[in-house]
Length: 196
Image 1 (tube, rainbow, N blue to C red):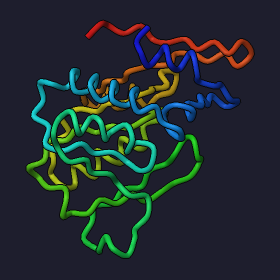
Image 2: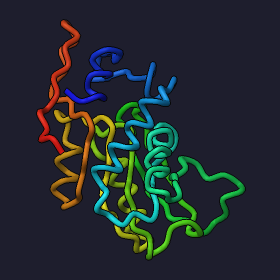
Image 3: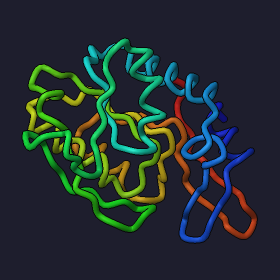
């Protein structure tokens, strides 16, 4: 069991509807030492890639993507879930559906910050159905940027998102892949992963 799986078992809370709450350490209150370790691990897993930018989606993805961008020494760019007055009109857009929040958002990235020369590492906190990642991939493709890889903190392996992204031919690395949740016993089962 790796460091993130151990933390999920220790502090994660199962909720009805295949929800794993990790808000005590990952996406509400944040354990910054854990985030730094996540950053180092993604850097290790994608060290052979020539990353020029890390791309994520607000809000929970930002905290995970920040230490990754710092490890690579590149800018962090995040897609906004709403257009604000100060972003301008020249932007890439995609519609994404949130499994957790059960809603759809139009996400935007300013064309000023994403271009065809960029080699992206896309980072997010959770992967369930893959809608957020597909939206970010579509934005990258619209810009002519290259997606070098995708890093996810927690993947729900019993849902289709990981398979969809891998079947698209992308290099996807998830630090913890949950295969099963037993709400009655509180047991979380993880997919065995090869040591990297």
